[in-house]
Image (cartoon, rainbow, N blue to C red; front, side, top):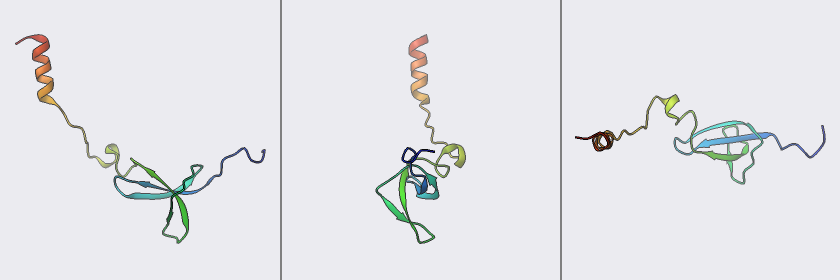
Length: 81
């Protein structure tokens, strides 16, 4: 392999900002923010908006809001009555 063409593969902490869930893994992403992990080491911190701790498929909590009144009105407007 050639030197200097591959990104740095390092341990990184990903933090879900909606549920405050964090996990340590390895990644090529870099960040200026750091966090002290449970093992006492300091790792780069990558903030994410959704993870398995906050995704509706994995949590079983659907955040879908149905606009049934609007749908009925549009149907009546489109097809009469």
